[in-house]
Image (tube, rainbow, N blue to C red; front, side, top):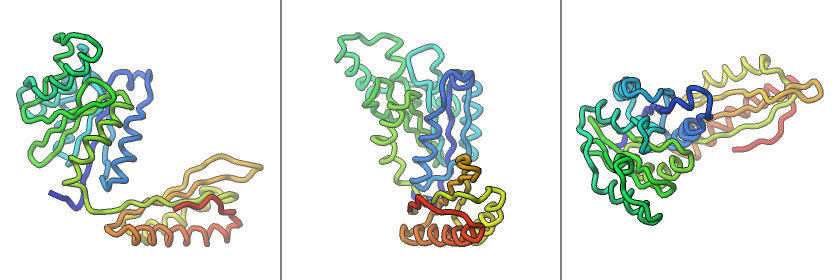
Length: 268
C-alpha cells in the first residue's frame, strides 16, 4: 500500500565502524538513495556486533519507522549476528530457507567449494523472510514484512549492498513509496560570509513547504569565503518541484547580489 510519507531508519552494524577501522559509506549512500526515492530517513544508527543491542535498535525502529534497513553482519563468521537478531526482534523462528540455500550453494559450486555449516549459516532466515540475490557476493540479503513494516538486511560490503539494493530492493519497496519527485538544485557563492546569508536562507525555509535549503562552506580563496547553496524539494509533480527549487534559489541569488556575492556553477 502506497503511503503519503515513508520514514526509514538505517542501522549500520559492526564493531569495525565503531572503532574507526572503516568509514560508514553505506549509510551515506543509502540515505541519499532513499531520499531521492521520496523516503524520509529519520535515523542513522551504528550498532555493535552484540545481538541484544541489535535487537533493541530493531524494535525501536519498528516502533518509529515504516522501513528499517540494516547493513552488515550477514556473513558466515561467529560475529555475524544480524539475521538472528532480526528473527528474535520480530519473534520469528530462524529456519533454513531453501531458496537462499540454493543461491549460496550455486555460488560455491562455481568455485568447486563444498557447503559447510558456516556457509549454510547464511541460508537461515526468519520465517516468512524472502532472500535477496547477491550478484556481487555470496550472502543473500533479507526482505521481511511484519505488521505493515518492512525490514531489509543487506551485506556490509559496499558493492554487495549497492547491488542488492538496486537489483532487488527497489522493486520490492516501490509498492509503499510515495508518488513524489525530489529535485536538488544549487549554486556556488563567493564573497558572502555564511553568517550573512543565514537569515536569507531562514526566510526561504519559512516561505516554502517541503523544502530543505542549506549552505555548505567550501573554504576561502583570496580572502573571500566560498559557499555552496543547495536546495532539496519534494513534490508530487516533478516540474512543480523544479519551479519551487528555482524560485527559492532566485530569492537567495537576488539577496546575495545585494551583498556583492558572485554566483557561478548553477545546476538544477
